[in-house]
Image (cartoon, rainbow, N blue to C red; front, top):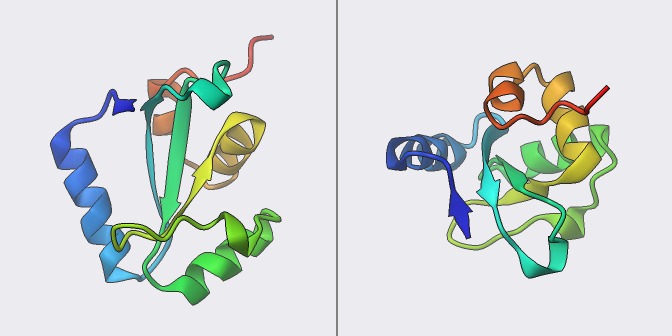
Length: 104
């Protein structure tokens, strides 16, 4: 279950993903019984699979981890890798908005 984002944000993410020019990010709150300690997920998507695969290689993401449903191919980023990638990609707005910084 996804929550904590506006419909306009989801629509904008989908539009950019379908354009296939670059990898785009959407972070939202998320509840999943398999990952009870994880509260957020970031979707890193691009409809150009070659771009998405090349981008994923930078972070050692496996091709089989790509979700290819609903015409919006994406990686789901959770946990430590989520924070690491968002930091390296300069997505500080999403890090702050969803309180993803590790406690000191």
